[in-house]
Image (tube, rainbow, N blue to C red; front, side, top):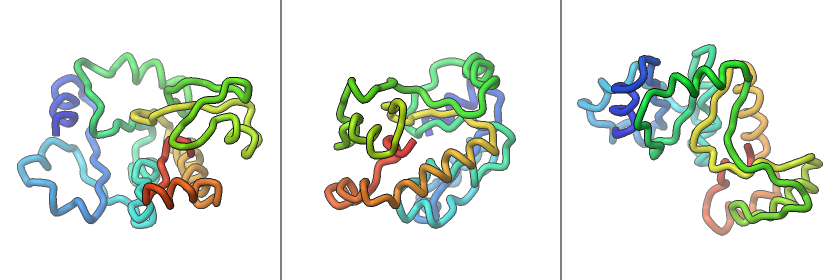
Length: 168
């Protein structure tokens, strides 16, 4: 609710809430007015706790800025929209190489680079990302498909879910 209030105060862009069916009943009617639209989360994504990977599929906008519910927005996001608009997909993070290993959600980034044949690895918390619809659908669908890779099953076994950050 705090995020929606801050966005309404500082930003003219539409506010779309993508919400899983299991949480729909928990949304109080007085909060529904904070959003321009409320759209259902496609079922397959909610079942794997990877709802943010469904946002490009669920939202029909030509471009979108995803914000985790715990992101603080103290001022207008206009400059962020402007900076991102020249790109098709933007995700903030720390670029890692195979020679600069770090832990990221129980995964060694060097091992991820080698396992998936990457040049580098973006260590991100994925609290926000921007996308143009077609590229967003492509990138997020690929990340969702990757969540089924056996490499990530250890995390699912330990914590009961696959985190989205290493997938993006």
